[in-house]
Length: 295
Image 1 (cartoon, rainbow, N blue to C red):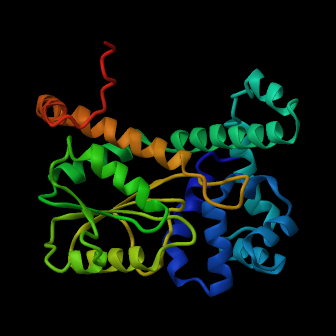
Image 2: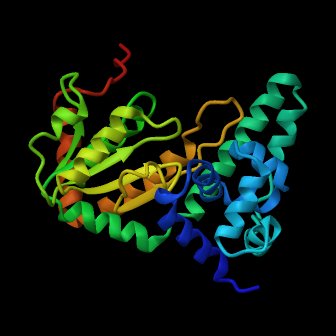
């Protein structure tokens, strides 16, 4: 089988998804977001997970020039066979499972965390990270926004990342809307937006306005396709699959840590000097707790 077939299918779907009818668009987005499941599951299970009918999947395959669903699934199945994960569960997972229901739940959560970190990092192309760092370093101002649970990730990225990237600004400030903060944004500046399914309306609105005002856009999300109304310059995709029905951000945090490491490395001596200055100021202001000396 042609090894370039799967990437070509993915690229075509990315280009066509804004113009696809609603049902086909939903099926296409599922394929883009869950290529591994798509390669493994039969048509009825794929239809159930995507929230469409099996006939819609057949129509999508035909639109892409395939004879049917199985022909479309084949290159995704082949990619799974050739790139199967070699990570074996560590022995302590079995020990946890043997400790009753609490241990079983902990073991499943631990395995899930390991899996989504691995999946998120193995899909992080070095060339893409290099382009993201170039984009951020070149922008005179870099805005950073997120909402609800994703805000914790944005706060951490800002708290640490500004030492390497002084132009980084967390918005909204002063309990405003991120839209308000972008009122004075100028072309050539940049926005980092962090959002995961279900996507925050405020974050999507901020992305739309940023693009309309000529800002560069970097997204940290669970999909290359977040909204058909705009396209990001670069998207860092994190798996957020979980055992507890809410998003697990271990993979997203791993991506953010990688981005921070690259920013610090690119910043060189200037970054190291800023980090040292921050630390000196914290010690000077007694920001850290110190245990009292014993008499």
